[in-house]
Image (cartoon, rainbow over the protein chains, first blue to last red):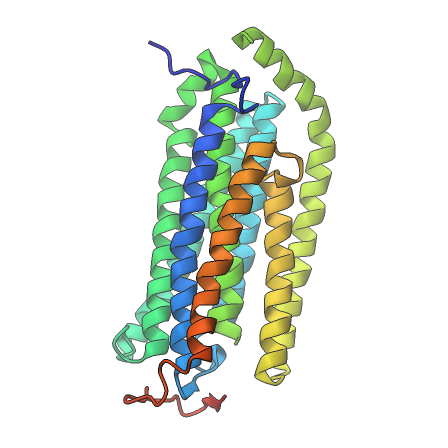
Amino acid sequence: MDIPYTVQVRRDTGLNNGKIGIWLFLASEVMLFGALFASYILIRTGSPSWPRGDTVLDVPLATFNTIVLITSSVTMVMAWASLMRRKFSTFRIYMGATILLGGVFLVVKYFEYSHHFNIGEGPSHSNFLAIYFTLTGLHMLHVFGGMCVNAYFWGPGAKLYETNPVWFTNRVEHSGLFWHFVDLVWIFLFPTLYLL
Amino acid sequence: MSDHAADHSADDHAVDIDKHVKVYISVFVALMVLTIITVAVSRVHLPIQYAVTIALAVAIIKGSLVAAYFMHLVSEKKLIYAVMALTVAFFVVLLALPVLTHENGFWLPQPHVDQPHPDAEHK
């Protein structure tokens, strides 16, 4: 039996089910990160002293990563736009670039994390580093998850394009919504942790 | 609506894609400029209340650009707006909780003081 409303829009919602599903999921993600941001505010305002992020963390590396993630958001939306234009080979290039940029982001984070652990600055070192590792660690898991889904659509999942290009385009749009959300979270994490 | 009709709808939409792409490029440039502004302002070492206000204001502008154009919220259906409105309402309450707790002086005095960094600024 076919999955209903993957291409057609429901008359009552005006949307296909996948889009409602991803937005509801993103709503839950907002609350997940919201809880951690609230914890950050609670810990920071309750502490008699708090280090400026740039005295502990590497701002140039994080700025580079911000540029990488924003660029990956553009390549993601261009991948979707390529499918809307029915240019599959261009989609592959943009989606490949998105996955690659996600990889660059994770590699840079690996070097950041390694540096801290090598000098004995683990999560237990201070409240600042505890919340830093929690927030950025969760964010990194999201980047990795998004990369896995995008890699599926770049590779084996792309077979769907041959039989149902509209459904495949919708799937890529939904995957893109998640990827943009991950970018959006970083846009708030970057100044909160690194610059203030 | 049949798959064929849906395909037609997607093809019609493809005509507008060129306009969308121009917007995406403009948003990308704006995000880059705002990132540079955020970093530049942080190097001035403003008092913490001004630094937080400016950093969050720029982050909200950047986040809004991503949500509005990359996530297409600027032209979404009412149901998505309803879901987002509910989410924002709960999110605001969530972030307000620590502030309300702070007003009650819940954690003062602190029995444990976290070790400050040598260069730390006292609030």
